[in-house]
Length: 326
Ligand SMILES: [Zn+2]
Ligand SMILES: [Zn+2]
View 1 (cartoon, rainbow, N blue to C red):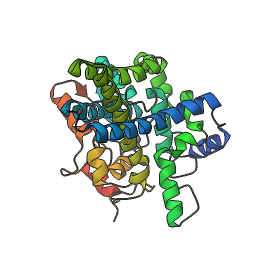
View 2: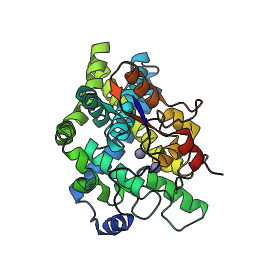
View 3: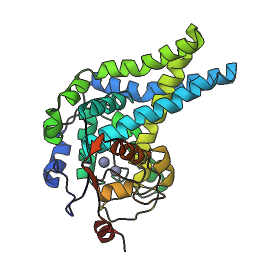
View 4: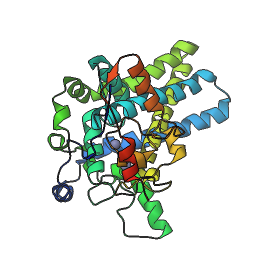
């Protein structure tokens, strides 16, 4: 059973903009320990990539299993983010069984992009203040219009916002995700988030050992299936925050700089149709045209065909025409 979006697409969690802007100014920087954790989460996958590249150059081709671990792990944990954290929880764009919700939450947590409650809170804030002061990761908040200003904005939106003062590491959950805090699955994944991070590195290490039977294979599994895969997933997700608020086309008037970008659309498992998404945030489908490849939507539609998903929200043609840039 699909339902169409109400013409007023303001989500339930919408909070008065002026109060959010005031709140942004009042958020203190994170304590040092928290900032070191964030720095490690951003830097360590990059170090892993460099080490893996040097080893590949030194030892040559290491077999398809490590490539499969990067691609398979990226798609699985990436869908945890796009279908689970984003479309299911942040925007409540469809409903499903508890065990499916739990599966997507576990997969999303293993992408090492933060616990589901923290991720959803930051993301809802992004929608509430998109490209305005208080948006956690807009590339447009500087006042330097030069090429240098653009690069600075893009780097800030990509990962700088996580590193500069860490203030987004502890969003006010009771303010942004009060509806999600009562969910025992989300609370559980939030509480034991560290275990999911360990699993995210431990599972590929175990697979590397199982495939090769050697400690060297386990190390390669850790490097490729763990750190390199996390690096790939991180930077594709973050490209939606940077590139998809800068480069691409604007089909709909979303009141911000969001764009539809075909490369991010494919690599981002459908999330790069970001202008569509900002125009219709509660839509379960982001690639609204038949040619806009949206793997996350294909997954949601397949689950619907199996009777595992219901109450899917989609915009009507009339609503889409009304918002189309003239
Ligand atoms: Zn956005
Ligand atoms: Zn969103």
